[in-house]
Image (cartoon, rainbow, N blue to C red; front, side):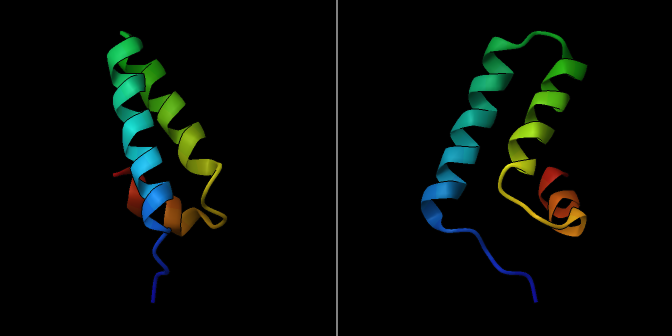
Length: 53
């Protein structure tokens, strides 16, 4: 069973992803920045993969 993040952290991640997509024009750079953001909150790679997609 996967454990959900608190609502405040999910809102923060959602708003940061939107900010990154607005400000960074290069798509590859966007994906890299989003992965860095997600890595700060998730410990295991399985959780990261399910959220990143």
